[in-house]
Picture 1 (cartoon, rainbow, N blue to C red):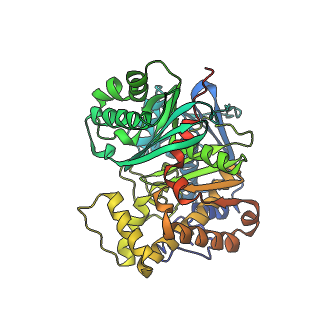
Picture 2 (picture 1 turned 120 degrees about the vertical axis):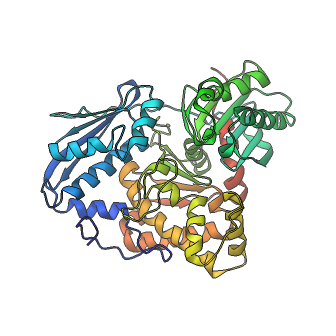
Length: 460
């Protein structure tokens, strides 16, 4: 029985985090005897709507569990698909409690403010008799290989760039940088331009530039991105929203370019490497970057910001510093997860080190066979198995491609092996349906920038 009065059975828990409560398992247990209909819809740009038709208990005794469940469903829809308007049809007491959460002074004030800014529309929560119908669009993107292209991948700890000729990478480099701690947008701009010029030096000409970057991009504009976390708001509109557009035009003039969320580019990289569709790409680096290529090979236009989608129902789960919420993916599938679990493993990391440097310490221990590091990667593998089951209920994916620094080396191999073992034992039917893949070492680290190079269409 958990703190919300819901009983659930879980066979595998992470050794270093035994309090972990897989959110998917909580949902299953919650719905077993929930019989009162409750519908949720979230509206985003261009009249698109995501809908979840579900059930609650509707009793006073389980009111807290009902409110928690609907809160988590809305949080998931907002960060998976995006939105500025929430509709709820059902129990008014549950609606009122959740509506207060998603208000300017509620527990989800961050989400209230963030989504309103991204969509440039006041955030609203409405109680209705009937929620709107599902409505969604998707579009083909990438896989353009012809010509001389530059692919740039802006990460939180390093930036990667590739020079690509007719689909073949002729040059790649990684440069350490610190975008998340720098308040001067010229620091970011100069780093982007330096990467462009470095790649251009290895090409006879530059026909197009493709950019993969953490954050939310609409019409190639940076609507929100943690890379620019320290940039003051008054400078953001002036120097950040069009930073990639300016960098391309200032460096190369009027050539085709495209900017996409790094998670979507990782999914595109997966689809290209696997020569198949229905791919969920998960890049475990500074954060958890996720993207999805659907069954038609299209990018959906969803946010896919699963770093902020809850995965742990434990009331003691770690809070994310940015959103203030607890139990969200960023603390389970990024370098933060490795750092979070290190004290429990008996590894004391020097606080003066950057997060990327702390990860390298643990990776080095893993390469030496240190059993403390082994337990860290095994624990993240357990997290991942339970969470992939949850993600499958959201996406119905066929393939998962795992990328990013956390997946490098022996640690990544052990993480994947543990994940597969737990999936086979806890979710045997799912284990047989899905395919988990790791690219080779070079592709893991720079493949995303090469896939980014394929984004622009030279005919447009």
